[in-house]
Length: 323
Image 1 (cartoon, rainbow, N blue to C red):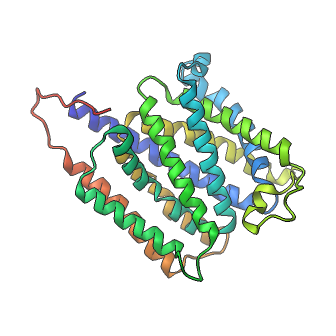
Image 2 (cartoon, one colour):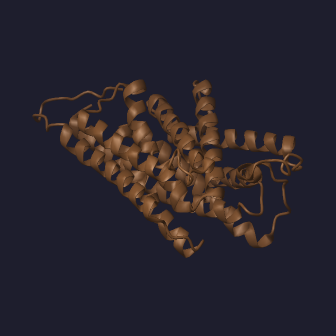
Image 3 (cartoon, helix red, strand yellow):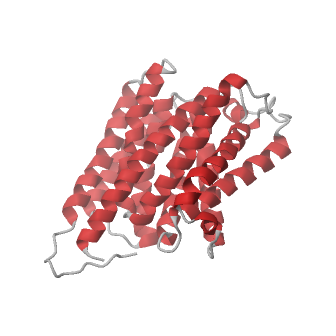
């Protein structure tokens, strides 16, 4: 693969990651808006139903039709599916308990974790300057989480756990992306969401564990509620934006270097601040702004360092991918 091809793939992946992040931001605000009424697994189940319909009407026709569902790497798809289900669950629990800007900012340690995982699992190169950027981003998370102080909330740990699982999910996507299409990866993610949410709903959907649960788990253990017709447009938005975002993010990490594509998801951060102010009437405090600045700055620094680290080859020179 030539250097020009790598750069072109990275740019396409960055565009996919940016649009996907916008879709996921819509999901975040929708989930938080519904979190006072419905159980988490109920929302995920309805979102998945709409997502399957969207997949059949939009994604499947452009991804090869029925063959999109075929794979020889089912074990990897199931592992990736479990990662994304768990990642979403931890993030959504955090969204229900924290201001949306705080939860999203803490979650955005994920591009930094992806960079670390890309070294461990993919053999991609991360130089000392990018390690320094990663350290700065982690410092931003610590400032926001405030471990060891009276301001610490256990809910602040949830988006961080989500970030690690999310990073692992995309490392798997990068690993199998050479043979598996974004459509195939998206389909098996949908199946994972449907299976887990339906199973959890059948097991605890009556809400029998909710009364004695800690406040941070109420969203997870609440009983299923009758669907309010006024909320149907929100569920439709969740299903469509979720599946489109899932397809685009799978495509991003399938074709681009993981450490390059990841920081472009930061577009969700300013959107989270806007949603918090406009929809929920919350405005970030000083520590949140400091944390956001450090996390965002570290991500942007990684993009800058990435664009400078690979020298331009001679016209007839080929540079081969390390994956």
